[in-house]
Image 1 (cartoon, rainbow, N blue to C red):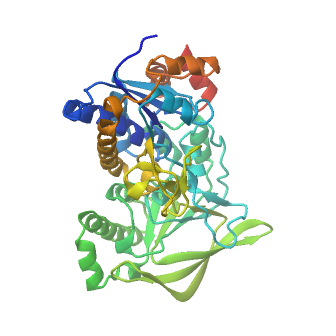
Image 2: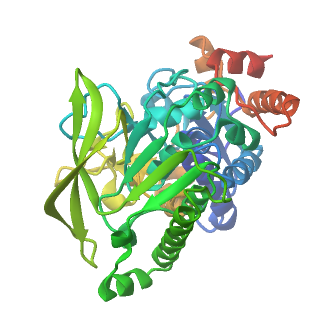
Image 3: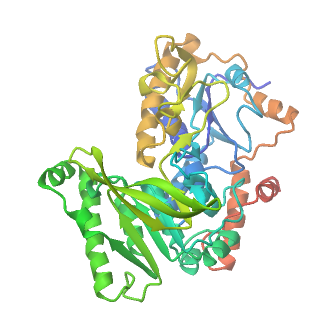
Length: 483
């Protein structure tokens, strides 16, 4: 037995939230550990149910985001830390229980992300041809347990949502397959699927106005550069009153987004004036309509299949309140994609806040509680949540970093108050978890195993003049990692 006196922390989820928290924990412990009576050494074991790390960055964001490579590379540098031990292909609640972790770790941090769509909840949402964004994203990102084929036979499609995921979905549906392949790591099945995509007309429906959309400027710039696609807007949507312009100007990011949307309006006018062209002035063979103040109210069907969508015009006041006008319009579409939010994953043995869609935690401070809210909610010692598991499916990767700092600060404060400087786990042998998993026939994939998968993906990409080409079969990932 090789018992050690370092702090021992288990993190569930090796996406951005889990990796950032691990990094920040070690940095803050290095700075404040002596002062808090904790020492400066810790071992962090990072558990991930998928065979590979990076969660949302690898499997939740469109493959053509230029910032993704940069983020993935930063996360990889963090995982190369000898004090962080990666355990991929280990599922919490199935391969290892909460009690088993608490026996071996001084604290357990949940960074479990989100995998399910919020339901659409409109009449007709159960028709054949209605899809949640999460499943489509899993397909085009090559999620290990996702679909391998996707029905892209609709010539007219609708996308519902006013955030970045809706933009991703719309962009991939309007994408040129060869252009996408040249610039990204998409696997062959996704390339073939997008190449066979029949979509010629896309309608993006956003319930609120131009100044209330939740797009990032980066998303808008990517929308502007779609080969063969004409952007079409409604001039009236851009007729903003003084109060709305003043309100939008108060927040820097909102102001930048609105300015970019006005640039898109100019671009759309030029495309029309030039004879229905794309951004480079070439003839466009696909049309992408952007509808603000448009709330879908019903998916229309015949014989169980989508044939259209009914949309009500809305009005949005300067403070973001939306009201309905009673004016309706119907659009012929054969497929509807909804990107109206995710539902973060639950965790066995941890209470869930259904109303806010995250793990139950005290006043959003990341300390896990016995129930979602109310007088009976007690803090459960040594259990924490960060990222979407803590706050629900809102915010970008930057919010995840600030979240991590808050949670780590609370963890260190609690550990410093605990007996023996936070060292409360009974079993302090770092090899104990390996023996437990081995006894169950669980073979974790460590950082060295991930590097083998990554090297193979790079080699496969290089054969086609690409930087990377994703492996999507979990069995192939395991074979590569354990070779």
